[in-house]
Amino acid sequence: MSAISKPAPTQPTPSEEWFRTAFDEDYLRVYPSRDEKSARPEAHAAARWLGMRSGDRILDLCCGAGRHSLVFRERGLDVVSLDLSRPLLDQARVRLGADADLVEGDMRHLPFDQVFDHVTMFFTSFGYLESDEADRGVLVGISRVLRNGGGLLIDLPDRAHTIANLVRRSERDVDGFHIEEERGLFDDGRRVIKKVSIVDPRGKLRQYVESVRLYPPDEIETLLGSANFEMRKIHGDFDGEPYVPGDAPRMLVIARREGR
Image 1: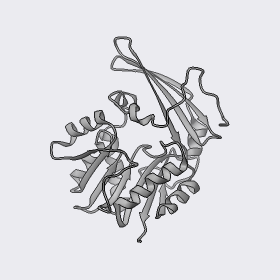
Image 2: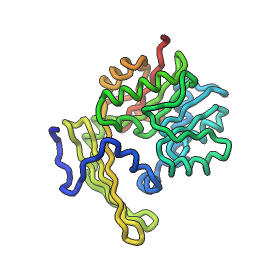
Image 3: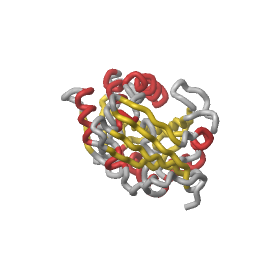
């Protein structure tokens, strides 16, 4: 694997399924800005772009603590919230209430078949797997659970912007927890790997490693096409600004499942 930058000497290699352990209670400390306040404009924008209507059935895939699901429910949508993380789903249950349709599941093995009008994947929930073909398998599964013409939103980091603006190391204190993050680019800029080290108030150290594929727009369009999707639009942010590679931190992809 050729490297644009070398990892810190202490940075471990992520396992192929790093995401099984990275999204526990610490996740909400590492990403405190990902809250209900930030989710509201994002969910409303997704609803506009995908043409969601009251009563539509939505799959909030990799829903985390359910912050976008909450907004969708308030809009009168029939929401299924799926995530692999039991701790985050527990938080979602508190947020959404006892009647929420929460599913503990793996995005690679969706337990549905052609039942949703739209699927959303917010905040870098795609690109976790070990190969492009494995990522394509996720898209094939999403295509299977969508009705003909169903909409898909994927919220991705912009590759060029990430490479140009990568913060190699950062640290901060949150509620008595000390958090350090080290980041590096690998595979000729195709992947960003982040090591997160957390020291709790008792001095106990916990570490996680995240590995995310950075797709440029042409490659994500090809993947979508191979999974029976047509890419319709890319937005540069949730305000609807035009997408310009390198200028926008996000790549908000809108696609439609084609009829079969």
